[in-house]
Amino acid sequence: MKTTSAVDIQNYLPHRAPMLMVDLILDIDANFVETIFLIKEDNVFIQNNVFIEAGLIENTAQTCSAIVGKKYFFDDNGIENENVNVIGFISALKSVKIHALPKVGDTIITKADLVSKFTGDDYTLCTMKCKSLVEDQILLECEINLFIQKTISVSQ
Image 1: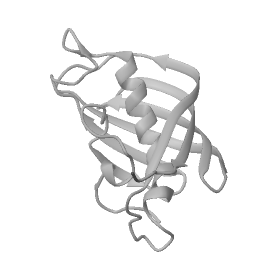
Image 2: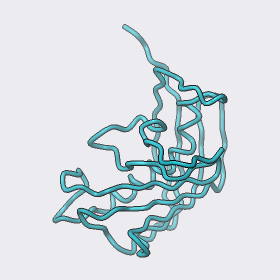
Image 3: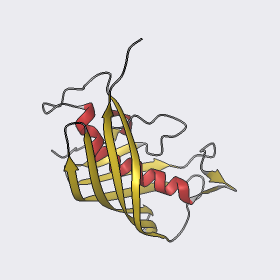
């Protein structure tokens, strides 16, 4: 299933401002995702008008998480699962190359290809190859391992 129009990343991730580092999913299927993100001056990862390395890595992780996160937020028929809680984290960064840092006002396009994925009942481990760009300038290239797990919510 491939999307044909931009999708709000919040449909696939639990992140919300100020930690949301992706605006829209431009393209997604089972093995590829492409996102867009406008860097604003109030971003938590801005220092001296520059989007720092940690912000680039978080943008990449959130982009990659969209592929594996969507399985928890939507069922096989595309119907939204309500009250879903997930936790995810970067388990490894491999061969990270940061070529340049974008500035406030720049728009980042991040692309990720699924390299491998292992899925259990309530968790997913995956490795993805990623690239972030501003226009034709490569900002970041890396492989990232992610762990995403569905959590049990306890009502009080």
